[in-house]
Amino acid sequence: MSEIGTHYDERSPIADELRDGQVHMWYWYDEEDQVPLRDAVHRITRKVTDTLGLRSGERLLDAGCGPGETAVFLAKRYGAEVTGITLSGYELDQAERRSAANGVAHLTRFERADYMELPFDDGSFDAVLALESLQNAPDPARVFAEFLRVLRPGGRVSFSDFSLESAREPERVATFMSTLKLPQLPTLGEWLEYATAAGFEIEEYTQCGPRVYGRKSKYIKAALEQREELLAKFGQAALDEFARRHHGFFVPRKDQIGYVIVSARKPRG
Image: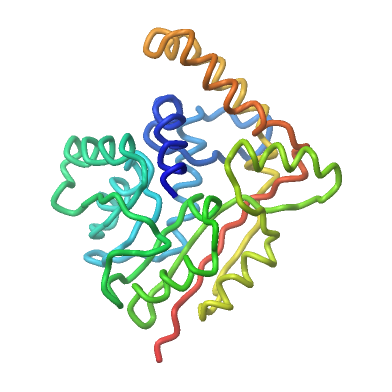
């Protein structure tokens, strides 16, 4: 999985700047929705994390924590004790810096760790969050088994990720997958099957792709509006490389790629 850490080391700095510490997707209601990109991205943060039903003092594993903004948000909003893991050195440094700057270092800790083999005891957490991090798992079944293991009985998991909505023009999907380094692209049904096969009980799910990947043109417009700011900070060569690395992300038709949010629970006994 070391190549995944390098993948995020390379793409996260500019994505971090564009999306304010949240390197996941966005959510716009329609083409007339005028909220800025950073707010549209934060909608996904809230929409996914709300399904966990976090309470003050609960122990949360943020599996794929990115540059740390989601962990900071959850610590501040709920008083949750958040452990974030990532394979990216850049993200780890940013998460620690962001946590300290926001006064929640006492509620958060960040580690370099692989969710295929979590370095935590059985029953260590009340909840697990995987916000667009399962997409890079070479063996999702093994990751879900690890999530089940580190959760206490009755603990919850919520995850969001891309889904396959149309198998037509498979070359477009293959380009998308290669760009994001996706070993597979499950359908919603297959995502649910991964969770239930591991032993989770599904409690809620939705597919909101039309308002997420389906609004990719709004992301492009928003990113272009920040071009001069990014140019001043990173330089032309870095922007050109960022654009080159992300070209394949935009190749599928907007109805081919979905976005699923799933919440499930570990049985109590």
